[in-house]
Length: 490
Ligand SMILES: *[C@@H]1O[C@H](CO)[C@@H](O)[C@H](O)[C@H]1NC(C)=O
Ligand SMILES: *[C@@H]1O[C@H](CO)[C@@H](O)[C@H](O)[C@H]1NC(C)=O
Ligand SMILES: *[C@@H]1O[C@H](CO)[C@@H](O)[C@H](O)[C@H]1NC(C)=O
Ligand SMILES: *[C@@H]1O[C@H](CO)[C@@H](O)[C@H](O)[C@H]1NC(C)=O
Ligand SMILES: *[C@@H]1O[C@H](CO)[C@@H](O)[C@H](O)[C@H]1NC(C)=O
Ligand SMILES: *[C@@H]1O[C@H](CO)[C@@H](O)[C@H](O)[C@H]1NC(C)=O
Image (tube, rainbow, N blue to C red; front, side, top):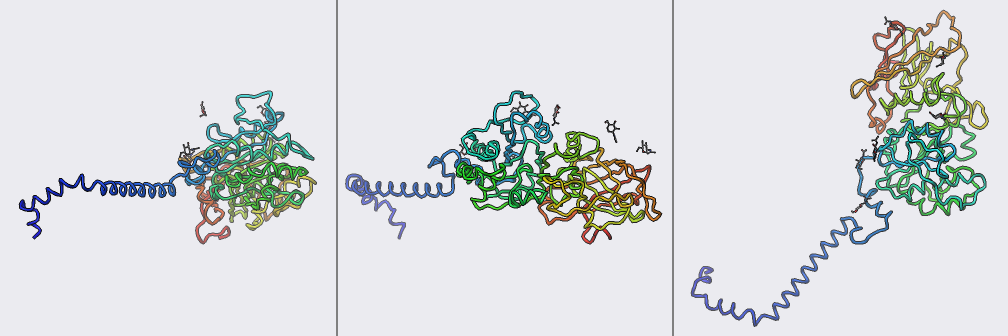
């Protein structure tokens, strides 16, 4: 049947309709065209709607520059946080920057670290080796204050850094010109948090009196603190009004804290930030660092040198030479026991080793020796952590070793050598005590993967090599992950 329809015999009606089609159906044609047009419009508007729902909105609705930045960076780029995402804002002043720049030189890496030192006016002397680019703070003189105008200026650094509108900034990290940062560890720590949420991350003071006077909820500025992009965007809207409200406050960090409080964001504590509000020798603190990455050290100019008989700058260069070899492991503690000699050994990797001629429990070994006093009153406490006194009895006192050499071994290991520091203490003469006759300690370790800090934490173990033998005054120790059932005593 269907074959017949296309037979030549049926040609003529077909022809006829063809011929009559154009003139007779002109009206239909217009309707058809209109329908087609509507269809095209429909398809176009649907695709437009879909497109605007899933594509970057700024193509159709141009946004102001800052929101533009939010769209591109904060929302769309969700790759892992790296050093390029941190914008440092260092509080400086033109009079002291020349001297203080020695501290930033220790950690600043040109073309890698981003940020500025913020100065009150153009410095008179500018040496080529002052690596940080500088900015002159603007608009801060208009604010009322009771204590110091520079506190207002410094409090505005977050705001002014945000106003620069630089691309790909996830975190604004504030610090003083005498703060030494450990940037790789900052990247690791900030990488745990979502910069699109409002975060205020920092640390307290070590001295209770300081926290009581300011606040336990405040991030102390010298130790450094981090403000996420999302929080900076909120602060941007309210900072100047806020600074006017808190004109009677003392410090810059206190002003930032007050503003952040108005937004309602609490402090996220990271114990690797060190305000170092202590007097004397920071040794005890760094020899027993909590199990957390080292992020910053402050007040170094006011404290004893980390290494004896060296300038503080030299001391820091030494510590940083170990940090460069294994950033995540710097000042991380491990304990082991020499059962033959009945010694307890505490290692703070990259800094110091203590050998006690007696068996001490782990809880004591991880408690800082109090080699320092409180910041304001120069007293023996209280601090925001437990301390134990340094004994003057040579039979209780540890033999102390300091980092001497660092060698990288291949891509993933290191050997650090620690040399005995001869103090003035006498010798222990008790018969039941084995005096520590060791001059050098070699420590081998694999590089600590920054991923380590994302897992449930556990201190690493250490192990005496060569059966704990001491050859020519030298001992060899290995630091490694503990075995599942292993404890320091078994
Ligand atoms: C950091 O991450 C961004 C992407 O988020 C990437 O473009 C950039 O190359 C990275 N920089 C470094 C130094 O790894
Ligand atoms: C910084 O270094 C310069 C030159 O190396 C030196 O003159 C100055 O005393 C140093 N300042 C500090 C605080 O160490
Ligand atoms: C840093 O970048 C500048 C240009 O942007 C270049 O001249 C300089 O050599 C770079 N420095 C280093 C240490 O890579
Ligand atoms: C943001 O994206 C637009 C286009 O999508 C682009 O023109 C602009 O350069 C980007 N801005 C930054 C800071 O990356
Ligand atoms: C301290 O250093 C100086 C010079 O570098 C040296 O002469 C002196 O012997 C050192 N003192 C000690 C106790 O190491
Ligand atoms: C013993 O140690 C000293 C210094 O620690 C070194 O100079 C000497 O070469 C060593 N002797 C042997 C036999 O290894």
